[in-house]
Amino acid sequence: MTHQPYSRRRQRVLERLGDGVAVLATAPERLRNRDSHYPYRFDSYFWYLSGFPEPDAAIVLVGGQQPRSLLFCREKNEERETWDGFRYGPEAAAAAFGFDEAYPIASLDQKLPELIANRRALWHSLGHDTAWDQRIAAALNSVRGQSRGGTRTPGEIHDLRSLLDEMRLIKDAHEIDNMRRAADIASAGHSRAMRACRPGMAEYELEAELAYEFRRRGADGHAYTPIVAGGANACILHYVANDKLLASQSLVLIDAGCELAGYASDITRTFPVGGLFSAVQREVYEIVLSAQQAAIAAVCPGASFTDYHQAALRVLAQGLIDLKLISGSVDGAIESDAYKPWYMHRTGHWLGLDVHDAGDYKTGTADDDWVRLLPGMTLTVEPGLYFRPGNGIPEHLHGIGVRIEDDVLVTAEGCTVYTHAPKTIAEIEEVMRHD
Image (cartoon, helix red, strand yellow):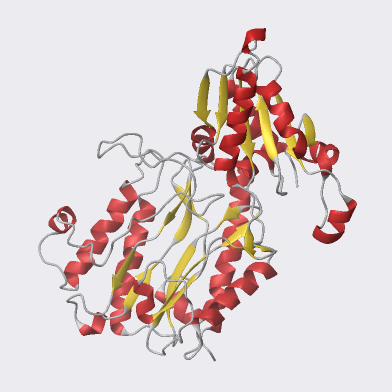
């Protein structure tokens, strides 16, 4: 653990604050049931600026002529540490995480009014947490109560997330390294699932193979609830039951990624349960793979966020024409949305500390106001085709769902694909060969 990347990000925020102050809290612990908690996961914005892993913590960044960063966290407590584990405590946390000052979290409400008094602006994650909105409001009211003595209340209140979203869109070297490692681990997990797959297995058995490989290689666990969808289940985009048996002649779609040091990977692979693609499965798979290849080729600096979606869309539309599911031209199919019964989502999203990461996709309301790609942006590329039984499609296509997803870094030269689980038909059938 090194605090330098986090300290540099705090410094960038301080430079943007001017004579302002920012307050940012981490996520609270959440009860699962009765007195059992969900596994703790910090707030992504808080982690981005601190790297501090404990609950009950907040950051205050004070701008101006003498900028300083303050951490409020739990005090050392031998009894609680016996039950719950190690706590840094303010003094050790300040040294370990590069803060100028650190105080007990219990003192925050008392200190906050003096920290925001006589500041031009207050930055806070407005509307994110009602309890914290109330604490901020109480601090502002306390300052207003001192106005007769000449104390000024911040005249502007800004949403801190808008500033951090802009920063988080461009990954620094520390983030890129973590995301590469997460992608390596997730790729190994998908390869393991392919090798382990047998007809008659339950979907959750493949989920267990993924979880084992993720943890065995040092990941913190799943980055999101995994999708392991056999047969027609793959046509349910957010299928997470993962409790059906895998039929020998069907495909299985796995959408799963791991989290490492807070950063997510996000991979989807689709492969035949029995190890060999049938002719029609092969035909659909090759359409989706060609669409993904076209989309990845369209990811480069200066391109808009929608360009790679449009590149995938043209290939998918032509594929649906070739399958005789729609007629006419590719342009006509796209203009009329004729493809949407079988491809209803976009081709990707930002990726980072959140699997659907922070950052705007458009800069305005016009059709062409999409964000332009810059080196350091990280996104997924994930076209698919889904043929739910019925829906007026030929029976031989029923229950075929294919999605192929990789994690891609925009570079100065174009892009780099982080993820490397087997993807071509030859690669998949080779890794699944059971000699």
